[in-house]
Image (cartoon, rainbow, N blue to C red; front, side, top):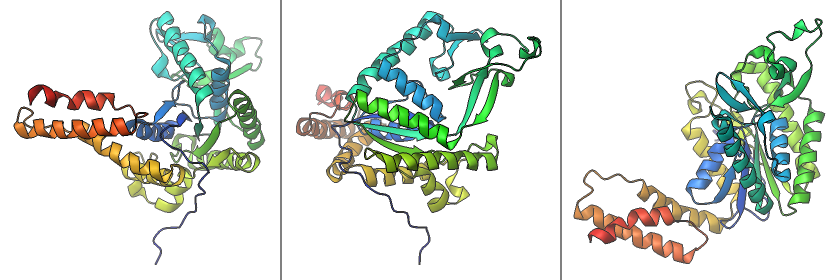
Length: 347
């Protein structure tokens, strides 16, 4: 008997290995994948603009990395005594304008260098809704209709709304052809900048319930349709069905967090397991298990750290880590080696 709907996921050739550089961008589900890969010592860079949800902001950010765009004072705005960028998550915001620009531009430069060297780009799209800035968001006016009662002029799309007043934005659902056009343009530019790139697209399984259940489904459907157009057009573009795994394979509220919108730890681990099986080569998966054991041992917190038993534990794992580092010099196990080296000072 079948208790789950089977799902077939096509593996690319070649698949990801430890010597690849992986660039990740998009919604919060991007960071679930990125954090897991980072913990297991893959070479990654994720979300240089912070979390992004809509295709416009993802494409705009990637284009800015290709151009190595550097931000200046006119690119920032002051709200509630804090300087923000409409193109960046609030983790980049700062009460000091110069510090805000310094952090943003350092991230831009790092992204430009990494993207040029990257082998894989993992893009997770969260929503087809985009928030278009209107004139009062840039002028500071409280009522755009004051200007001869004219309709407010639209400007660019905000990647993050920074808790600004709702009347600073026009919320719109992007069309399928519109999404396809902007993603195609960004893929073409990316391949000219770095011809070795391969793309993995996924649609976030996080439900945007605040948009409404019907609206969320319309949004996800447009993203899925656009991505499959790209998969059929480009040989370098692949699809990982994170959305379908959660919605159709797991399909149960026990796999969601208390907000009934975000997949919980168990669901996320299941999706990551499917990603690993599909997109990471077999030899690399075997090495991942060795690295996982070292990383898990590094997190171990003893009740009695001064005991001989704990010092022997450290010595044993120092030797294992050193051996692994020597066999695979491309791994960065420096933090683990430093931690386990405590034993050599006490034995």
